[in-house]
Amino acid sequence: MKIAIVTGASSGMGREFAREIAADEYLDELWLIARRGDRLLALKDEIEGNSGDLQVRPLALDLTKSESIEQLRKLLAKKKPHVKLLVNASGFGKYGTYQDLTEQEISQMIDLNCKSLVHLTYAVLPYMKKGGRVLILGSASAFQPLPEFNLYASTKAFVVHFSRALNVELKSRRISVTCVCPGYVRTEFFQVAQDTKNPNTCHNFKPMYEPEAVVRKALSDSKKGRDLSVLGFDTKLKRLSGKLLPSKLVMRVWMKIK
Image (cartoon, rainbow, N blue to C red):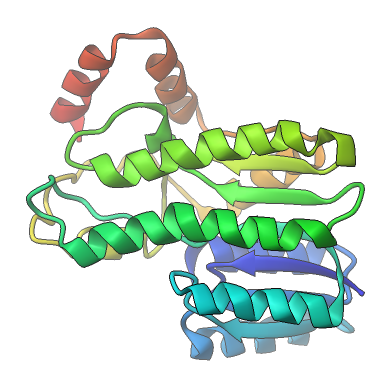
């Protein structure tokens, strides 16, 4: 049984990845993971209505909880699928300084963006074969230190390093890992990010990209075996400035334009 797994599938980038994969890949089943089961059921109906024989398996799991990862492990062990594609799109960010974030927000951001990502990826890898592809959602924020968006940007810096090193580790198995690092994308991300004690920390969200464009480029880059997928001149400039310019200068500019 050939399948793809998409986390964070109830909205935003994850939902768009699910739609594009359903239209583009030959699969027996598409496994969708997110907390909001009602949204997964709605997406299941949409995809199955447009995709003929493709079966969608919604899995309402909270990936910040270890028992959810264990539940996925048991399902994989039972079904023993051939996982052609894994998309890790779960994650969230919160604007604000160290004074603005609650302990719960801090823990959940690190757990979901980093800890759960690693455990889930490692749980799925035994079921991938030659030609398998992993896509992991990073961010342009990973390319430079960002005061007042520090914790999220730091988790995404971890994601970029983890993804690119894992890509090298998996070369002998002919499995590729692509880290997708978009700039601002028109999703629900901002509603969550601004729901803090300091919602106006950042307010300059230009240019804004559509999720369809980011996802299509990401899937194309993944097929080409690229370890990074970066859409847009401004995003590429952020990456370049993070590599070439002094961090203090980059942070001063960020504080003026954010």
